Image (cartoon, rainbow, N blue to C red; front, side, top):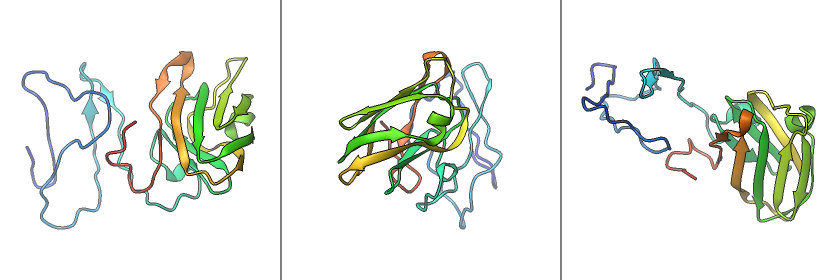
Length: 178
């Protein structure tokens, strides 16, 4: 159902939208939309789920330019991140390059042990520390070759919970599901 500027959707049978990513709905508009606001979504227990409208573009200058739960590799080997959850562990592959070394960033500042082998990067804490929720530079990579992105992303939250990160490929990551 849609009003002048409000969209409302729910199931009379208690159906839910499964976890994941993709198109939530298609809107037919009269005029040019400038964004979304007042976003309210709930889970199966009618508990509020935090969502926001991402207005970023393709010019990524730091991790705060990214949507939530995204990683991005710069030409200089910095891995930017944006996460609304604490990060307790990280693992990913660098596509198209060999990782000669990994250091720095918020992972090192949080006391993580960082290692690399071939194209794989691994980071965690022996003391249980976490990278606090936020955005910035996750790690800095010394690379041999021209990296084309990150894949095989495995990010863990506190207690080993899985964090559903994706690699930012530009635009608004519509239809990018891993």
